[in-house]
Image 1 (tube, rainbow, N blue to C red):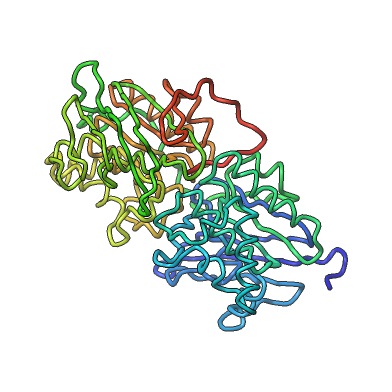
Image 2 (cartoon, rainbow, N blue to C red):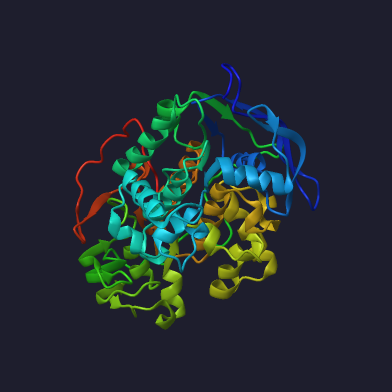
Amino acid sequence: MTAKGTALLEASGLTVCRAEDGSVLLDSADLRVGPGEVLAITGPSGAGKSTLLHALMDTLPARLRRSAGTVRWHGDVVPSGAGGRRWRRGHCGYVGQDPALALHPRWRVERIVGEELAGPRTERARLVRESLELLGLDEEFAHRRVRELSGGQAQRVALARALAAGPSLLLLDEPTSAMDRDTAERVIEVVRARRGAPDRCTVLVTHDPGLVSQLADHELRLSPPSTAAPVPAGPLGSGPRIGEPQSRGNGALLAARGLRVIRPDGESLIKGADLNLVPGQLATVLGPSGSGKTSLLYALAGRRPAANGQVLLHGRALAPEAHRRGRDELRAVQLVGQHPAGELNPAHRIGRAVARPLRVLHGLDAPDSAATVTELLAAVGLTADLAGHRPHRLSGGQRQRAALARALAARPDVLLLDEPTSALDAASVRIVLDLLDRLRADGMAVLAVTHDPTVAERADHVLHLRGGRLVPHGPVDPLPTVTGRTS
């Protein structure tokens, strides 16, 4: 029993440094969460929000260490080591920023959600079913594997797993980022139902001000510890115009005719999609989680070949599989996926990742490619020093922008974006969207899957994936009280 006015969770002076050089990532963070309260942690990309969650749970990766500070639960210091692991198992539920990457790819959903549950089999099955239903996933989803889930569905499965054991402390990192509005509302109701419960509290990392206003009792805003000023984004410089596509005429750059895409279990996701992307156009695709938006992008890029139909580039049919396309065809159509953490090679520094298309596709030598890497990073709002970092040292939003910079290095005619703003704060969203506007002025075509009205509002053409087909969406609704941002 917690006395009135006593915090359930309290942290003081939490400081996190890199083990290799002692540089500070999180500097003396303090927080307090009382019974039934929701604390929102906000701040720009790279401020240490996700790092703070891991510091609270003592789950920092080996490359980071908590150099100072104390975490208390019900007033008692949370120990490290085995004692900390017992505390996490007994009290914590956690959903990270890239939940699909944390789910076992070979397990069925029912096993994933029930992994930490004890008791009779029938009772475990009931808890799994109730946790899924709470988040709008019916019994059919219990038998799917992760590869059969959309980004939003995987996010809900991860949340169902965190909720199944009824945790006293729930820690959520961007919990609605992969969800459409209706699905996000379910998550909001789940968190809202915990408010006021004397034995429960919630810590929420988010970039969404609507989510903060609806759910949070308190807000902790973090600032990046670095004193380095960010490089202002501007037009790509006078060197090689890597951002400028090689457009040809005013016809469709990329077209789809009768695309049919099926799930691994054989069910049709897309039943005959038609699409025309012309130079300078931004088209957005909206639709509920699981409707096939990501699968559409994968079919266009050749990552997940369509079962039927054609993809045409400059009027010429492309091979369904990416590995059968020519070098210039691969250059011309670039995809930035929904989970950059899984797309950037963890062994390669960011500078090397961005430079590779410059050298391989455009023949730039080392000095020219290094200069252009700096230019591309600046264009997406990243400082030049990040070129020397590996992906694990970047925040989710920084990785997302680094993946965009790498795609732009190819000098594509068509850019395919899967939730390009899902991990970004408002200032970074503006930088990315303004950059896309400049690139479109040079003739690049952009197709973006999004749940973010900020992106859709800038679009020339808005489509809705409904019933397996692309249909005109009509005017974009204004932002409601809260939205999710990915699929």
